[in-house]
Image (tube, rainbow, N blue to C red; front, side, top):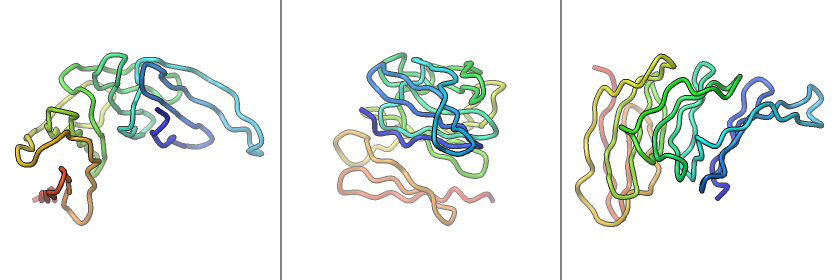
Length: 161
């Protein structure tokens, strides 16, 4: 599955695919007419979850490779940290924090610090209403996080108090 939108920063393009395909970083030439592969990685094989780039590090979850959350250096592809505490998740970003919505069966939402120094979860809750798998991608707008599960829509106030 090639469903994850590539990440671009300063002439660097990161891509990933699920089912143990993995990804890598390509460098775009100044004229935009060619690319040069810089590194590849099979650990962060994001299926359709999305990858977050924050201050030079990529954050996301693995699909087949390890079903864990990882932080990778965009420059080198080196793993800064990895944890099995978060499995296959949709990861979104707001206010310097990651929100990971674990699917397809868990339905756990975790709040995680974005730092390459190590994994720190600062809170979590579970979506218990509704039925079916937890596949939808949450979104954040105006201090609220919205999560859909089948015919239900949940809104959570996440604005700083």
